[in-house]
Length: 391
Image 1 (cartoon, rainbow, N blue to C red):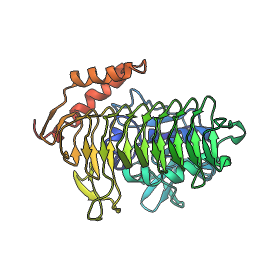
Image 2 (cartoon, helix red, strand yellow):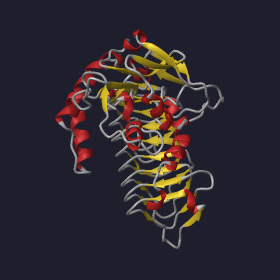
Image 3 (cartoon, rainbow, N blue to C red):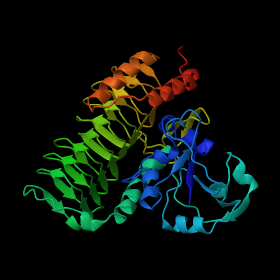
Image 4 (cartoon, helix red, strand yellow):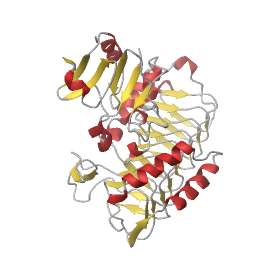
């Protein structure tokens, strides 16, 4: 079965700024990304149908018989069984949403011309807020899919553990003088991850491979820290993608932070309006702020962003990719990509400065931007130029 994860154009824009640099199928929710969830179901040769500028890094592989799946759908075994029943030129839909099609080719409107079969709506990451809203549930689901016989035992005598049977410990994990409370949900500790002394963790929680909780970190649950990321301070119901740093004190709640971000010491983001009214978040489709359906929404930040020490964000702040934010006071709640500045004003973060900063951070992990990465950033810089109104 040749699975191709397709970006629905409307949903992809709804998930900006995260999807400027990745297909929808590479968004993380729970322990694993959507693509990794497919791989764990046995589909190791996934490909992606996304914007042309992203296809350099995320190519499409087509065969005579293909299963095109909406990239925001969270896969499970029931969906796989349903796909196996799909006939050529048939499409599963749920209400007005297309879920999956079997066809020899694809365009964004192709599904409308195929024979429709209704199915129960699966879980879908079709909004930014769903990433953190569904994260606890997804951690629980992913935890059940693990091979629990491979879990190790935490040996540290100074660590207090509640319900150890609800904790998965991969090879090379270090836990020192911490409190792990898995009575409220499962805890996953990825390969070579490290929980330093004085940290307090409440599940559901996922700590990715090589990720670190710095001394005294407080994690309130429904939180995922991606591979290679380092965090500290207080975190609640948030998803931090791979290789990002929030290494110091400061609060992050009901938030999504992209890859290769660095939040300076004391950076804090509100997650609740002080009048308890519904939060409004920037919508890239409508190019205006829209209601989120909840009073709880924190920081949404794209890849390769930086904040200075003591940076503060209002609730429901959206920061585009490649931005550098600093200065006293609260910046605006929609910050376009490649922005340099803060409450005192903004200017464009030019690409030569951005590339220098990004490569300096990546060099600390013995990595660097590839040619494909740079082409993507050049494209996004042009795509987002009209949003930088000060130019």
